[in-house]
Length: 204
Image 1: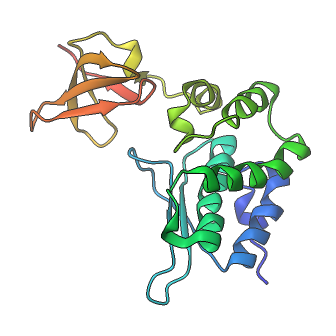
Image 2 (image 1 turned 90 degrees about the vertical axis):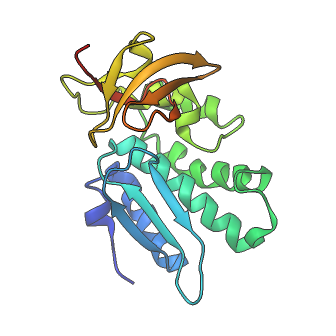
Image 3 (image 1 turned 180 degrees about the horizontal axis):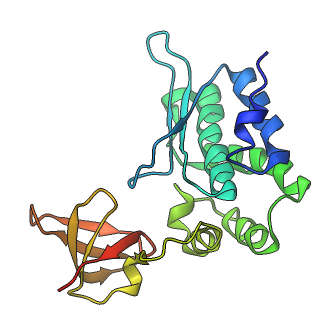
């Protein structure tokens, strides 16, 4: 079996790398370290027409976000192995798998105290993404490398213009429950943004 630990420890806490390497080998999973994607942190695809399980995780996540996202996607893999398409993607079965897979990393005590506390709170009812748990997401974001001119959507005011890393430009319209409705300037289409999505202010 190939040992992926040397590569994985560049992206996640070193103590976690051998465990994830074993998971990749044991499941025969095609594990890809992906380019940055603003729409998602990671992705899981079930076997299809002879292709193996496939997991991808964004390369630019901080080590703790990378590890938690990896665990999240492997929970999908394990859920598919047991139930295939007979259960909801983030239903009871997935939540059970996520908690079980997270357990050895919590026992290793590799997370800083603030992340550890946020994870325990999140695990009471794991959501579709760590992004949807704002307390955990804010805690993890604190460990990102600072971008000098980046702001969050929630730091703007209604009417402010901003752009994404890919150059698309928007105007913040209003807050709707936990997200912000924003209009893309080019298409006039409306999109919902996570409150702490990183954006760059445009001059008005």
